[in-house]
Length: 483
Image (tube, rainbow, N blue to C red; front, side):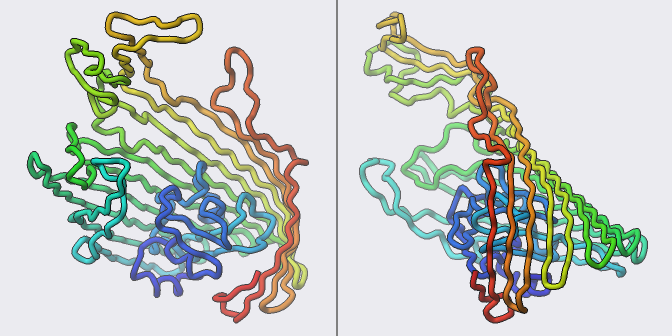
């Protein structure tokens, strides 16, 4: 779908992924909380079984395969959306559902710009629907809960500008569109009414340049900056749950995110095309590290009252001195992609061969800011040669704080050969073969001096995937497809 088609249907949403359901065999699953901005179900496959591309470079989430909010770009940035499903070409791997590619806008020989703003809020939407939950007073009972609606507003201004730097040779396009959300939650606790506020800001900024030194050579590069910041936290809306004891207004976090792409196309003749593309994606998922107390974190694994002990701070099982000190110092995921392709056109047949390198990495540090004490009041310690050992009041363990720490990366490679045969105006066959070489590394390279093997490893001969697909455009307009 090109820009003319989707902009006519964009009144009810601002990001391109909301339009994917217009493609045959595509359904949206907005309640899938583990799929970024909502799962996209293609041909019956789950949201994690798709592959998402921006300007030809993959941006799928490393852990779940979904589309993250940082790459769900606004309509103002998009020139064309392409959805491939049902027997797609061998050049695309890692997707049993669909392949979604988004092309960003580029400049033209004329200067064009736009200004706009979108708004939604609690006054324009219906209240939240009631739902069943476990009763906070008795976990064995079901509870039909009607939450009180928050007072919220979401503003989304936008600005675009593009045009020629050198007519017919060099063009540019720039755009900026932030999402500004403010929420107020008023909860009438038995101890008194309290008001909580939260601000969320997501930046979307795009810069793209297209260079054509000659009719046979084209180059393009784009950069997307899409970080998010949250100030404040909103507690549970159920008044039967105790009010938080810590300051919610200082909580929040910052999630840096950016994506860069570059592509080079050389067309020596009307039958040959050679292309090279590079993509880079970076995201640091450290939201939630604002306002975390820097103090020893003590939790009671057994109740002090049950042992009748003279402890300075009595409490039951699960009691803690502070809410938590678990902090994500950093959780960086990166993706480097390199694609090399050669295409030959022979009548109704389009032959294509290529190589791809996908380097993915994760560097993470999640720990308790000043360690954690686990108190076992009145209990005895038993492990190995130590049996029933206890102090006067029981025993405790201390954790140095590290919960998850490490840095790993893998290099996954693939080669493919394919033929796309247009047997008619509406009928297309895809025939090809794809081979891959990939591995999944362990987070710990050694355990007790013994090297840990890769949990998953496939050589070139282990993943040979023949491809045979057919697609029939039943009406000729792309709305009905048999594949």
